[in-house]
Every structure is written in structure tokens, then in C-alpha cells.
Length: 544
Image 1 (cartoon, rainbow, N blue to C red):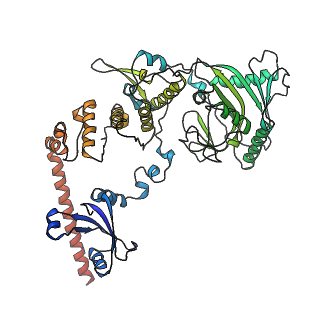
Image 2: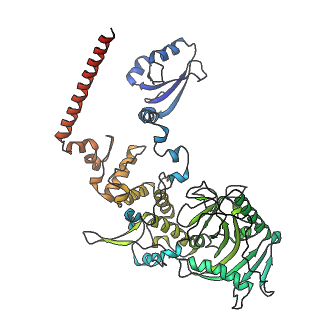
Image 3: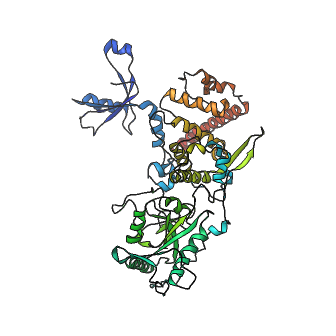
């Protein structure tokens, strides 16, 4: 087609190993009618000059040409600027080039992010219904803090099993499973010192001590004796000991959505999703591994469909904040283990009670504006957690209506969460699904927190002019006229005429001191050039 601005590749040999690049520079109707010619402008290609390129084409007997339908003139300055950058200076290089998902995460400090508060009413309906559902039921923060770990010193290759030596009561319910595993179910262990009481207290204490939901209680505890998994766990213990890794044991919780998954884990052990033919069931936002938590709150949400959580013994090994160790802690009290062999699933705790939206999430504090209006504010990390729990609430409470809590749909809520959690986020969907709407809402969210935007401009790019007009009109409606400036003169909206950057420039008061400084700098540069020329002339005279 040879449309104006398109990129053209011309190969003198026809193999495209010696491609000469050019851009369609002139495709005027008058020239086409006159002699049917189209003008191309050669692109700069390293050390090759325009003459060299032209000679290569003239001396070739045949040529072949390909054309890109992309308007290259718009990309050329951007690509030239990118070529001048060092790879480590490229913005978002970790995400866009290396595809490092950990690099893409936005980490909010759960203690110090009070300054990153945003207007929660932009996604949460500020009413008594939502206030009751989001109301906090907290325990002292110290109860969630895990004990500090001392560095392992003299490590023994033999681990001591702390299981009670007492035998099981013959009346206790039991079930034989594959691989020689046995499940013992305990609902009421009684008060007599027994194996049942010892095992029940172990699991019950871990659950009750760390659970943050006042409405949760233990209904039944299953204890699993699995010789095959115990042998595998002991072998991993010995391997870590020989490798000089820490071998201290810790208890962790895990939640899964179906009873089949629970039975599979307790019988065959944990498997890493995405490997060995095992599908990823709940995502792998922080990398591959077995996801668990020190406390049962998050696993309770994942186990809402079964009303069960798994309590497992675990070997941390070498831990880190990223995915490089044997285990790592991506957020809050989560722990991700590199291998399922590091965990020994021991107990299944059956819980009961309403999930609601309660938990250790503080309800938004209220700010009163100068006009007397009340606005709820909350931290970004809190809002991310709210959205996750709201989705769990809707999944488990079938009668719950999303419209009771927010004016956004599930996809739009998820878009807010992804945008707040990631440096680079992609929201896509067919026409009419609310992409422009959620984009404007995100701008409102960012502008509601000075700590996020820090008086820095937000750049909006669109593929077509009418899309940009539609977006900016929505911004003007929501945040006001004074915050918007449109670049480019192809707008068809009268309301945006006064917001064009060329018009706005005329209203900017020019500071004469700036121009005086520029003139002074230019004069200094000219003086330096003259001094340099004079110095070179003197050197030439001395060399003669």
C-alpha cells in the first residue's frame, strides 16, 4: 500500500539478509497522478551512509520489498531513545524484559504505609451494612508475630519425633488410606491424659492461638499417621542437615477448596502446582511452590468450600524475601516452600462459623473535608486485602449481593487490586465492559493519595483521538477541569478546546529570570568554545 509513515524493508539480494530500511515520506495525490511515484526516506543504519544505501539498490539487478502497516514515524523517536539507553536504565526492564514477577510487585509496608492512604469510598459503599461487615475483630498484634529464629549452629542429622508414645484408644474413629496411612478423627478428646487429648490439643492450640476471627471455632480434628510421608520428611531433614542448611521445624496452615484435594494432600503429600503434571489451582503470583501461612486466616478463605484447613510440619531451610531460597515470605504471614518434601501434613482441622468480611482488617478511618463531608480512608495494602476477602465472601455466602458493598463488578474490583499490587498491569476486555470507567476510577484513586502521585503528572495514551477525548471528558466530570491538559490538536470536543496544551501555554506567566539564566548559560558556552579554539590554535603553533 505504501501509506505515509509506513516502514519499508528493501532487500537488494532478495534474501532480506542485507535489508535497507526506509519510511514512506511523500505519498501525495498530486505526485501519484502526475508520474505515479512515491518518495521514500532512508533510515540511518549504523555506519552506512545514505549514499551507500542508494548505491546498493542501484547496482542490484532485482530487489524485494516488505512493508509494515504500522505508522513508523510515531515509533521512530521512541525507538531511537530506547536504543540510546543502557539495558539496566530501561524503565520496568525487570518486568517487561526479564519477566520477573517479583520485580513487578508493589510492596506496601503494613506498618509504615499510613501515608499511602486512599479514599476507600471510590470502591466501597460507605454505609452501615458494609461498616458492620468490615468491622475489625482484632487481637493484639503481638499474637501474630512469629518467634524470632536463632541461627542454626550444631545441627544433628537425626531429628527427634515429639509424637506421644501413648496408644490410640480402640474406640476412636479411624480409616485406612492408600500407602498404609491411617486417619484418626477426634471430636471430643475428653479430659483423661491420652493420645487423643495430646494430638487434639496440639492442633487446637495452634489454630486458636493464631486465628483472628472471633466467630471461628473447631468442630473436629483429623490426625493422620502416614509412614511414607514421614520417611520422606525425615530424608529431606537429613539432606538439609548434610548441606548445612537450617533444619528447625515450624507449623504452617494450608487451605484448599475441595475435599478431594484435602484427602490427596494428606495421603500423597503436597505437590507444587505447575510441575509434574499438577495444575495451578489458586495462581502463582509470587512464583511456584507450596503456598502456606503461619496463621489460619488466609487458609480459611481458601478452604471456605470445605470448612477445613491443613496443619503441617515444615522445614524452612534457607529462607529469603524472594523466590531464591528453599522458602520465602512474599507478603504478610505467607510462607512459600520450594518443594512439597519440606512439609509433613499432619492434621486437618474442621472449623465452623461465619466467614463474613471480619478479620484483622481495620475499617477506614474517617476524614472530614472543609465542606463537612465524611470520607473513609484506608491503606493500599488494606484495600487489596479487602477485595480478596470480598470475593471469598461472595463465593461462600451465596445470597450476598455485590451491589451491597460496591458499585464495581467483580472484574472491575479485580482490576483495582491488580493495579494497586503491580507496577505494570494489563486490563483488557471487549467494548462496553468498563475499561474507560475503571481507568478513570484508578486515576481518582491515585490522586486521592498525595503519597502515591506526589504531585507527578499522570500520562494517558490512547490509540485513537476520540478514545482520548472520551477518557479526558470522564476525568473532567470526576476530578474537575483544572487537572486535565490535552496534547495534540485533533480533538473534536469543544469542552477540551480550553484544555489543549498550546492554549494553556499562553496562560502561563513567563518568568524573565529563567530566560536571563538561559542567555547567561549560552554566553558561557560560547566563551568556552572560543577559549577552546584559541587553545588548540596555540598548540598547533607550538607543534610547528
